[in-house]
Image 1: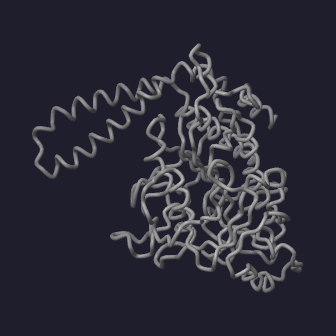
Image 2: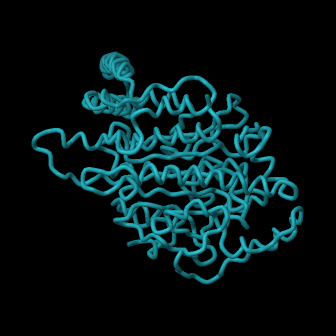
Image 3: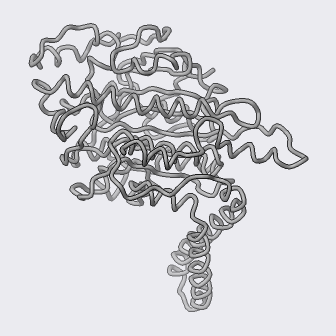
Length: 448
């Protein structure tokens, strides 16, 4: 019963059955068109258990309950910069074995915590902006426009959705603020809200009824707006111009979706039901929606949170535990829960690998794969969930074979800002800025 609902939803999208970009070749004038370049981010909440993830720490035998030894292991990374082959995989990274030549592990990257806000909320919400502490005025958060929106300025203009934001937060309670469940921001204080419900995401991507409804609404808004424009003063006119432009943006998005109606009508998805899905199936269902959106050209930029920060409400984690458990609470009780935490970390890695498999199995019109054309980054805003450390974050970059050199372990010098990686990725996609947040340079060893 558990797998049936998901199989029903996925009917027709396995393997090459749903190769939407190949629809371009249906016309008699079809030619091999160069595939679009994409970017996606897979965010893991609450950090990782270091000895299960990081090379050099996984080999240590730490007696169960001996947290003191765990803490002593935190500095075991090579303090000097080095690049070497990614050979032996740690227990948490073992699911990546078949993709070793397509992934690069980056260690030694840090962020700086700005005192004044919750450590978990800041590590999630500021992850993709990494703003220099105390440089953003009028807010307690070092939160600026995030990398996905900056890159979307370059590669998102031709797609119906400039960005898409996915969250695998299946909780019905809203225990925490928006800062715990969103990593994508248009700018300081301007959230790009993530969608948690697979049905809502499906309807957003594929429901043509919504296109018509938005069309009716925007037509009325623009008509009313034009009639009052002449009555506004200068300052209000400036604010109105921004508002008017945002409405135009929605209308443009609807135009793009309208043009894709014929192609979308060929998608054999069934709308997800409201029935309960086990944790793994829920994450993979949201992941399938993201992959299809990238494949179909609905977006070129996506963020994917595998779970929210903190949020003490327990998950069932079917297949791992016999009763619901809270990831956050486990992270603060490593003395007793370290084995369970290692299972959760590996479970999250397995979901990442599932998406790598999906992307790698989709052949595009030029013969490359979706994974070849997507820079897909696994990461967390914490280096260790129990200590709340912002240094030595767990980062894996996969795909993007035209730009990224796989099969490496890059260990950056101590204190290297995470923003160096975001600067590198923005440069790959043609963003002209010479600095990103607190960056000090590029991660050149990552480049092919």
